[in-house]
Image 1: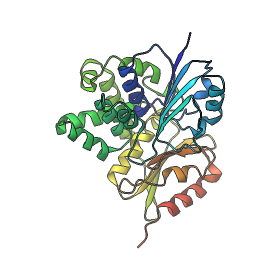
Image 2: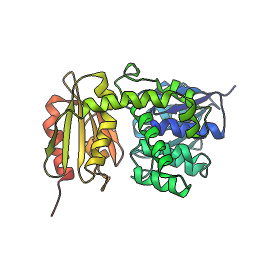
Image 3: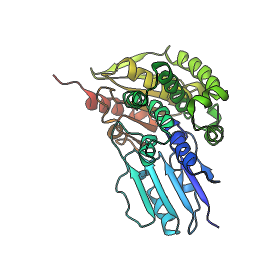
Image 4: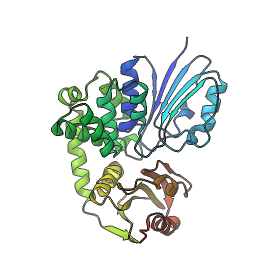
Length: 321
């Protein structure tokens, strides 16, 4: 009997992308997910002939060998993503839906695939991925009020915040558990009203952001800046939300938020909101880096590489006359 595997990033985009697909086509599937930076997820899937695998919001390039193995085993794979893919394999059992445009996220790709059937959740995901202009445009097209739009933005930011951590022990909700809580709700407003997850996340995120805002933000040249957070669970949880906050506060400037780790740092990068390009290229100059045009990260930047990273960021985002 064929099995179904849903492989998804644990952030707002991965959650909402899968939620749209499973609202459209309910299925008893095996969930494979983790913290936001846990992206080599397909390695955990032992798919067999005729099994169906859906992969959402993780880089094909980082999962290439696992993808080829799953296809060789005879499974069918559909892939929805917006990260740098590298060369996209051509195979009769592989269906890629990949769009790396800086204003796209995986949930918007799914929304396009489903002709807008669950667009509210795609808007939540776009806000979670810091694509505010795109999300507001989609909300306005649906006739949403500014207050209702703001509520979806806050939900997206909170869901995204929950995915950040070194391990699931840093998170308030494990992503697979969070998806199970989301699954009954085709309407994000009903989820906000009927489930206490939103309020729990909002309260914890507010506390973590207050801690982050007490740190120093240091300019790097005239087009970028960085901050360093301590080695603590709250730092790892809030790094993405804080990086997005800085991006909105200074939309002409690129930002990097570094979280101390033994021997180095975890790094979260945001391109300027007014020019959301180059974050992935910057991150991929370093061994564990990757991401997309507007936002990227480095899982571990050795202390000896810190100056090289700051020089590379300065060069990438130096303003020109």
